[in-house]
Amino acid sequence: MKFRFGSEEYNRWNGSPQSSSEGRSPSSSGDLLSPLTSFSTMSLASILSPQSTLNPSEERGLCLVNLLVACANNLAVGHTENTDLCLQHLSLLASPTGDPMQRVATYFTEALAARITKAWPGLHKALNCTVLPSPVDRLSARQMLFNLCPFPKVCYAAVNQSIMEAMQGEGFIHIIDLNDCEPIHWAWLMHSLATRSGGPPNLRITAVSEHKQALDNTARVLAEQAERLHSPFQFHPVLSTLENLKTEDVKVKIGEALAISSVLQLHTLLAEEDNDPTRPQKRPWWPLVRPSPRFQNTTLDDLLKNDRRTSAPTPSEIEEAIAINAAATAAGMGSPRRARIDRFLNMLRGLSPKIMVVVEQDSDHNSALFTERMVKAMHYYGAVFDSLASDSFRQRSLERVAVEKYLFGEEIKDIVACEGRERKERHEELDKWVKRMEGAGFGRVPVSYETVLQAKALLHSQSQSQSHSTNENSLFRLNGEHGCLVLGWQDHSLFSISAWRSS
Image (cartoon, rainbow, N blue to C red; front, side):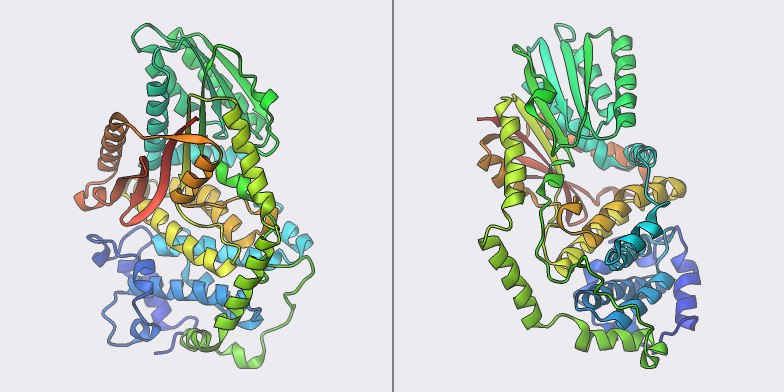
């Protein structure tokens, strides 16, 4: 079976009722099998076979996965024409308003194209000078995500409960917020503190952000909340990045009980100069050439079969890349990353917090090898976008597009297109964070039973209010691991929550 631009198959994938922009395929209503899940167990021949039992949406999803992997492999080894053809096909099949696989493929396609143009910094900046999200866009998208998705609410509820338990009986509480300012989060906590026995404590919140508008908005919202609750409150804004934050900036006073909250922030301190030989160099290694005539009539079937045979990195190329990274690490080239995060954690431990709560993405997107990082990111964000296909998001599709574009789309672009110190979204799994925190001298605080109960109740009520499907509600996951909480969708872990104190 041949797939050409404008063919019957493309029309079937993009125009059939089963693959409408806001609907799921019939087979996905129960087990919601993701194309990324079945990718490793299905050959391309079975996808393209006339006897295939897949519906059009599933065929399209699996072809998108194959194309993304083929494009990454060709890009990694410098196969110019094949990469360009993959991007052409991806642009036809992906859509920011389609099903979850189409939507996630849209942002990976953009990220792959951005990785290419970064070889010419001037060209890349010229193409993106008017499309970068403003702080206002990001703040608005974060508010939409908070209102529509259960994960942020569960994370913030767990943070607040852990702080409440650690601060029992304290009259002067100081919270250092490393979360880039989330006023609703602290408004919840202020209400809980105001209703505790003995009356509200004296509360001071130090918020760290590089965005002045976010700091000003947080100050206004929390001042209004404190006035409504008649609670003594001080707000201390710090206009700074985490990397430049100093002890004297947070001004911890004698007699204060200190809590530290970091929600999806610490991974940004893992940035270092990577040693992936396949990344774009400062000089333009990507030749500006037209596709040769032998590629101009290549079909999707031919392209993918050709990629399976010749375009993926060979075992020797992979071994060479691993050896280069291992040698660089042994020579100390990885030390800046360790020094940066260790220095920051040691500074926080020196403040002697009674509690520090850390929320991070629970996935490994910090590999120096581009193709490995991209495949793992495809699985992770495939689950994230699938979880955003609930009824409430489907009814508010414009808000979902904003959330995916300004939040997750930018994360995907960072993971795929950026390298070295520029790449900030360096997510790591819970095991690594446990070792890192313990190595910095923090002692683990097991998440309490009350915190687990609150998180489960909130996750259940939020997901139930968003969907009329019992099956869909049951796909949200909350598990315990290492005395920590792990939130997930189906079998994919998405976020970890851990609590610590200075030993």
